[in-house]
Image (cartoon, rainbow, N blue to C red; front, side):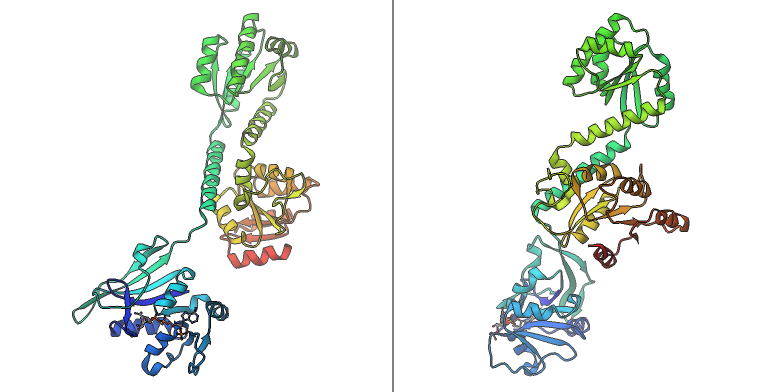
Length: 465
Ligand SMILES: NC(=O)c1ccc[n+]([C@@H]2O[C@H](COP(=O)([O-])OP(=O)(O)OC[C@H]3O[C@@H](n4cnc5c(N)ncnc54)[C@H](OP(=O)(O)O)[C@@H]3O)[C@@H](O)[C@H]2O)c1
């Protein structure tokens, strides 16, 4: 709905039941805007028209509590509720709130645009439009060239409502975006592995074969060197590559393990079984990762990446996970029992959206959140983690994502009995025929092309829920 008014310097609009001034170009503008549309006014504004008659070629809705009004050519409503019910029969884009003072005041919070003719003059006035320059929920979004009518200057302005979400939702949204940003940044950066030990072939392999996922550094086993690397390199994992290690070397690394524990840095070991046991006996317990020689390097790489990925995810608190995963419903209990739907007592259907683009996640959540519980995940891994403890009624799955793409995630979902029967709709901007066929071969229940159209999305979702 739009507000339309002509105001003076003090936002005055009328005096003694009349307009402050009549400017032909403004009247033409008003006519052009409202012809064929619905205009909503107070009874006194109707009275101010020539012979108190409704404006032609428009649907005139008039608010009045009086019962003696001549209702010819107008739709009379007796309260705001009645007015809103009547207005709901029309396309809201076609509804113009045309005044006066009391009506603007009651409708302003329901409108999202105001077309203001601002006249550079101060008149005596007894009716006013709310001063939009003083309201922080409205912003000037367009202005015209300056116009003149004799010596009067005026300008056509457009104000738009600044859409505000509740403060709490806003904060939650920014926290969520921040966490997603950190996760994405971390995903892009490599894990840091600090290598030590005499098993040089293995250490070389890390540098030559694993540079795509790990940033590596080496250090001696001297306590000072180990401590300095911990401080300045900041590793995600220390890996002791053992080969004929001296007793002193094992003792030093064993002692260093205690410092690592305090710093929350895991320690792994790669060596012969007896070497691993001797290290364990020095540190009086277990290590976080063990690789018994010989072991193929790609396998070691995968195990380290999975281990560090899991650590990163479980390092997030339950609340963080709920923020990432449940969007607007983060305040709901996140520790739902396995298999429970994600919204506690809320019986709306639940949708999980998986997309690496936070803006896309936000957009889709905005589209759906009024009717559904919506959880979001930035990749397949986060989604699987979410589905370990909760269920969903429908999954919207991005096709192209870094790491595991949509078809891979769908395959994993189908392979897991707990998620095999959840309907999945692919979301993708891909228009190449072979890729579409590849996606359809996975038999998703639906397929939608990006950019996502609100109405089509709602229709597609309704088919399943
Ligand atoms: N510059 C502009 O763009 C512009 C535009 C429009 C009007 N105006 C000026 O504004 C002035 C009129 O404004 P105004 O505030 O005095 O009057 P108004 O808003 O036009 O009409 C007020 C009347 O509307 C009815 N009404 C209001 N709220 C109602 C509700 N919730 N339920 C039922 N009826 C309701 C009542 O009618 P009853 O008394 O019949 O119950 C009330 O007395 C005039 O000077 C006019 O020229 C200027």
